[in-house]
Length: 158
Image (cartoon, rainbow, N blue to C red; front, side, top):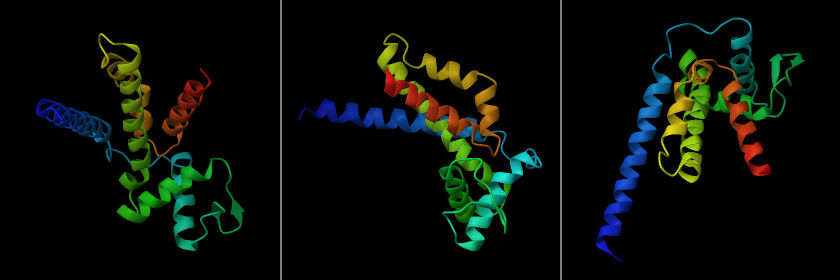
């Protein structure tokens, strides 16, 4: 194996690490500047907390007697995992959306590397600079995750 190839791989890992850290810092920049909006934004963490308290990860419950099937279970599972790991506060409730936003930036960057060979970073920069995606990452709502899965399903059809 050529020693320069090893250096190249290490350089790529460093570059990707810098991109991921920069995207995380960008996505987390406005976290914690406001409380969760009531009732909509607080509803999803409430369901996740009910899952943690009851131990029932199959039936999302808004209250002890009301099932809440408005979103896919993965939404509640990711919120419950984050709240279980990091505690019951706004940042933990918003972390899954932040991670989905960063993953979407990386997906758009990957697509840019395949489709825009001259400037592969440009689609990710344009996406990240739109107003809606960073604001959606600052909500405890599955909007970012849904838009990401919608793009993935659209890509698989082509």
